[in-house]
Image 1: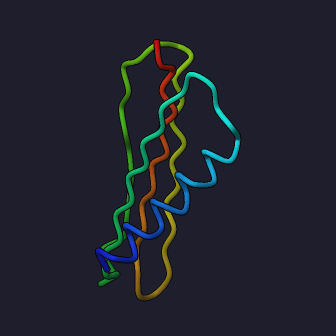
Image 2: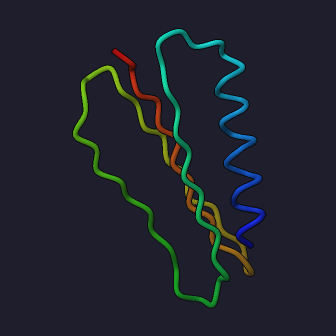
Image 3: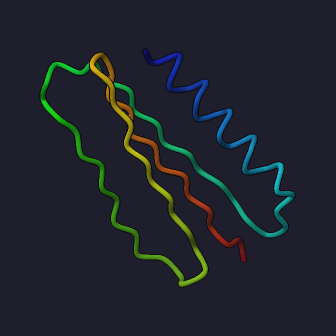
Length: 76
């Protein structure tokens, strides 16, 4: 599952870079786990400048849990 998480994070970051950002840096965090009926929750606390952004998504089915965080940080 590690390879899938890496591939997914690289695809998300590539899509973010397609926006042709000037002065922004991106970070993407993806975690994929086996769903054993434990439920899932994803949270992230950020203490950055007002211009910085974080989008999070939690997806699950009967087999997998996937938490994804996409961060956009204003450089400079």
